[in-house]
Length: 362
Image (cartoon, rainbow, N blue to C red; front, side, top):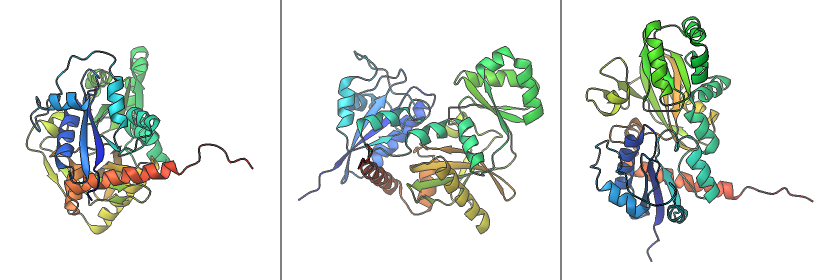
């Protein structure tokens, strides 16, 4: 008797600036999933925010060569962006694997919808996703947990419009130069600028405000860029650290995905105590936001001092992504990693089903 395969809905694309990265991640996961145990069912979301049925998604994917970093083509569909037939097909899945990076996918919105559907899903829950997406909230939580972060301030588009001189004074006095200006709710270094002096600050804030109403201005740290992968629910494990060695000063979106020359070293040879400290800090950051399933924690390493940069609750699964590379270095293949993540999602869902929803009155 053959065991029935679990239907795994893979969500990808979306309206964020990381759409193309999400498509490449999904192509990798769809191709590497264990077909003896799982039946992958693709659900694409176009740049316009239209959710596609599995059949429409397969049609759209045929127009996107693997690893091409091209968006899903727009399809002419009738009705609202999220049509009833898409929701019905999604509700039939046994587990959902969200791979929508950035806003409208990694920020708790999709996770909230899946909670309402009662669907098991891979990765962090609603609150952890929201905190992990908002860099200002994330760093506040890290500081509360005793984790070191770079000095930062938050600037809103309204504050910049009303009081630009005050913002410039705060940046100069509280942060200094060089600094980085980032959209608070975005990843893959989209909209991020390195600012060497006061004259470049207005353009950097303008760039960040194209993507978010809130920007983070953070002191630049001259250190090595180290990343640690975390896997698990209540008892997570951390991978050996890896290092990004960029071929230019700032590892931006173009350097990450469109140019050659950047080296990823996985694992990176570090003194034993430094490796252990990085792994312990990665797990502490993971637990601080109550993460589940997976995350990648990024650090700056200055000498032997580690500073937490950020956590990514839906790390990339592209051929050049550090998260799967770190686990491969630890002996877990790409396909095995996908299987473990699905199993963790089902485990978490079983735990939730055991919780009480009404008070016990004697």
